[in-house]
Image 1 (cartoon, helix red, strand yellow):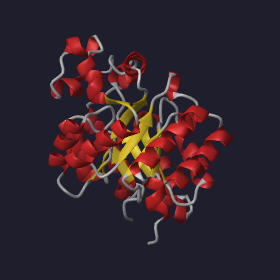
Image 2 (image 1 turned 30 degrees about the vertical axis):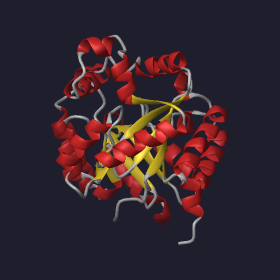
Image 3 (image 1 turned 90 degrees about the horizontal axis):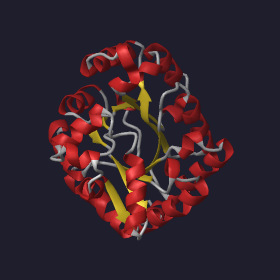
Image 4 (image 1 turned 180 degrees about the vertical axis):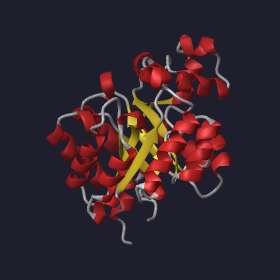
Length: 296
C-alpha cells in the first residue's frame, strides 16, 4: 500500500468532526471542490473518530480524510486495524490515521514511556495487518519524530513553527512524510488576533509535551506563561490570506511535504458558516481551485 495522496495543503478542523453532521459533510464536499488535498479531524478523548472518518469519506470522492490524532489509549490496535482493513478499497486509499501518545496529565497513572508505548502499539497494529503507509505519528520531540519515519509514513506535528519543521526534516531524511499543522487567524486587528491566539493556547500551555517542544525551540517558560507576542507570532499566522500563504511557504521551504491549515475564528475555531469563506479565501490565495481544475 502507498501513502494516501494528500496534496500540498489540507484543512485541520474540529468542526468537521464535532459540528452538525449533515452540515460538516456538506462542508467536506465544498473543501474538496476548493482544491484542498486532505481533511484532518481530531481524535480527542473518545473513540468515535473512525465513524466520523467514514462519514466524511462518504461525503467526498477524492480527498483524503486523516486523523490528527487518534489517542492510542482509546483504541485497541487489533480492532483499529480490523476497522481499517474492512473499509472499501477506495476508502482505504483515502484514509490516513494519525496516532498520538496523548499527555501524562490527561492519561493519569496509566501513562508510560511514550516511545515504548507507541512502539508496542505499532507492533500490535503491524501484527494485525495494518499497513504502515496508512499511518503517521503526532511527533514533537526528536525521538518520536525518528520513530514516525522508521515505523509509519511520517510525522504530523501540531502547534509548531517552520524552525521545528526544518529540524524534523533533518531527522526524517528526504523521503518520509512531514505534515505540520499551522494555525491561521484571518484578522487584521492585532488585539482581536491576539485574543484568538491566547484562547487557542489555553488548553495546551499546561501540557508538558508542548511546553518541552517550545523550550527546545528557544522560548522560555516566562514567555509561554505570559502568552508572549514572540511565541504567539511564531505559532500562529495572523493577518490576511497573504500572510497565511507566506507562513505555509515557510514550512515548505523548511521541508514540509504538506501543511494542514487550522483556521481559528473564536471559540472552538468558529462555526462552519464562519469558517467556509475563510477556507475559500486561503484556497483562492494559494490558487488551489485553479490548479485542481487545470487540465491533467
